[in-house]
Image 1 (tube, rainbow, N blue to C red):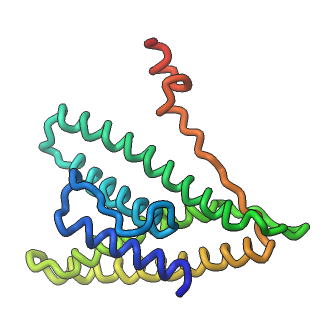
Image 2: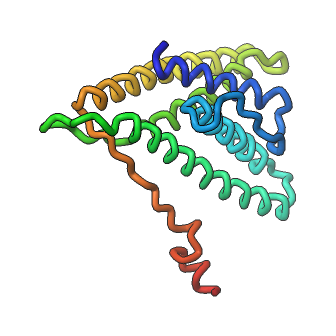
Length: 201
């Protein structure tokens, strides 16, 4: 079984597990061994599930401004958790490929493996929720047809991105591409780097 086949299966499992209760406050129960790539993939997608539903809730036009501010803080916190998890996944692959000697003409990819996996995780959520739209019974046939077209596009994107990730993994393993990790260096979350925050100290 290819890596992306496994990843997409784990993402689907995480999404289905989340929607058993469909609550942003439910605790995660990761079924995989701590530290394994499967554990990291499940954790990553779980965070994406929470973030997806945060974004739905905060767009409620009737939300109380105080509740919206609390939710915005939670979104910010989980955005940082998402970034951290991506970097954990990249660190896993950095260790996995540490014995590979790159070829003299090895290229540098435009994104790391984990950031490509991040997009694959988000795609799995888009596919789940778009499929939900295609089976609604309270909408007209035009809505169903439009959503089915979008779902077909998303499924194609998932297939293409999975293939691209597999090719990237093969190129790194074959020394054709450098395995590098780029840290995000987000400044707005750091009290020592955000002028609004350190200006008030």
